[in-house]
Image 1 (tube, helix red, strand yellow):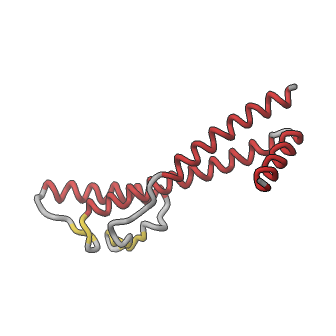
Image 2 (tube, helix red, strand yellow):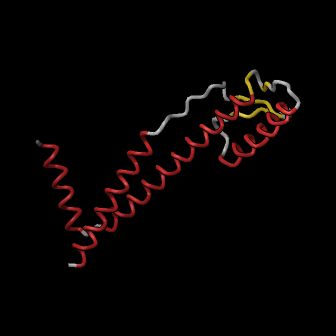
Length: 135
């Protein structure tokens, strides 16, 4: 009886994970405005490969420069693109990285739940999958 209760709870959690995975995967893809290669303070960065922390540090630095340029009433262009375009791209990349991290965490949780299922429930799910394939 305890196995049945646990299996039911596990199946409910798996359903919630599946719904979250669908929501996360439907969200926007990363489509940059810039060419993703920026030179700041003599150092070239490719925002496609930077870590979350590096992206945040770069965005903060660019924002400080952009705010300063606005106060000075000058246009601030970096590596051929407006600072606001770079900031927007970095924000988009951060969102993309966060979604990928969440997808990874959801896959790990789903795998853990699969391991917790009773053998009887695993057999039942396999049989259901085979039956649906043969229809």
